[in-house]
Image (cartoon, rainbow, N blue to C red):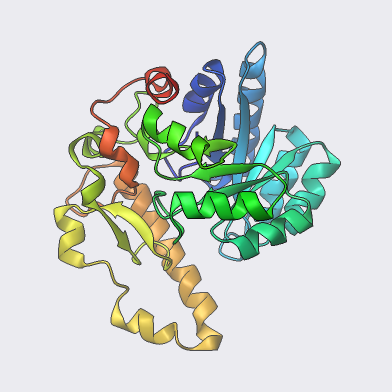
Amino acid sequence: MAPMFLVSNTAMVKEAMKCGIAGCIPALNYRTLEELRAAIKELKDAKTGTEGAFGFNLIVNKSNPKAQKQLEVLCEEGCDFIITSLGSPEETIKQSHKVGIKVFCDVTDLRFAQKVESLGADAIIAVNNEAGGHRGNISPKELIELLKNNCSIPIISAGGVGNKNELDTMLSYGADGVSVGSPFIASVEANVTNEYKQACVDYGASDIVMTERISGTPCTVINTPYVKKIGTKSPWLERLLNKNKKLKKWVKMLRFYIGMKATEKAAQQATYKTVWVAGPSIEHTKAILPVKDIVEKIIK
């Protein structure tokens, strides 16, 4: 169960573990380190006697000033794995391995895959062009085969899995496992609005578009009437400022902050100004179901 900003929570991950799969939550879903610490303890208590595993996702670039402190808490409290995104995992790998935590790294191409393997990553999350959120540019088949032929650590494919047939397809390409996110948005346990969940039922793969208006980096969203109205390109002033080398970093940080706040509002309350993040695998979401039923649909 892939980590999803503002969607993933402990209730979902506990159900995932009961089903024997791994679940992951973005550390940024917690406003404070105390809340993050409490979530880790809750999942550790729930893990007794289950087959599954739990982990947390760390944004490891400069857009996340909390990364270092979050890593310290994860290493102090312990978890099964950490997934790194959007930056160098070097420090995360170094600190996590000291306390026996595995590190999986999001990558979108071979160059970064080989880089994280050389740094000691335990597995690669191969983010393809069918993933939700910040996706890659390479098709699942091409990316999996490219990484399997050139890397020696496990390859976990992310994107394009919403049912058993698609799971089997990814495994047939050589993936060692899959990371599934969007189908779990419309779960009973997700604490987003019913409107967001219902949108994942009502819309399908053809309704997913890329927008630059959330984080400055292209991100997949549902093409609602509001998204159609505002468009998917960054405002002209932002595009202009991004061409300035000195200002680019700060503009991206500001866009990331504004976009995250807008996404948070959309996840927690329904307004006409709604931007819902999702991937094309919502094509197979036909009802709001418990996590266990969604897992069963995918693996059975």
